[in-house]
Length: 97
Image 1: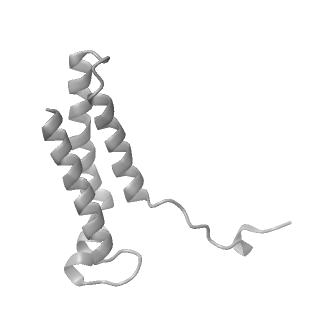
Image 2: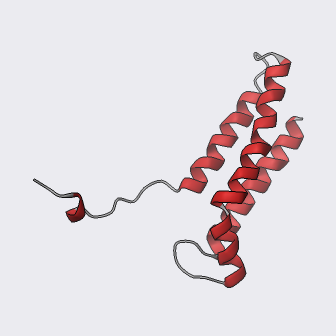
C-alpha cells in the first residue's frame, strides 16, 4: 500500500491561468449570436465580477511578489503573465460590448 506522504507532488495546472481561461470561454459564449441578446449581456457582465474576485484573492500574492521582487513559484514573471492575460480579457470584453 502506497501512502500519500510517499507520493511525489504532481505538477498541476496553473490555477491562475485556468481561471483566466474560464473567463475567456465565458467571453466566447457572449459572442455567440445564437444566444439571446440579454443572455449575452449577462455573460459579458460575469467576467468583470470574476476578475475583481481574481485580483482580490488569487493575484494578491503575485502583486506582493512584484512589489517585493520575490523569486520562486510566485514571482515578477508570474505577475506579468497574469496581468497581461487579464488586460487582454478586459480589452476583449470592451470590444464585445
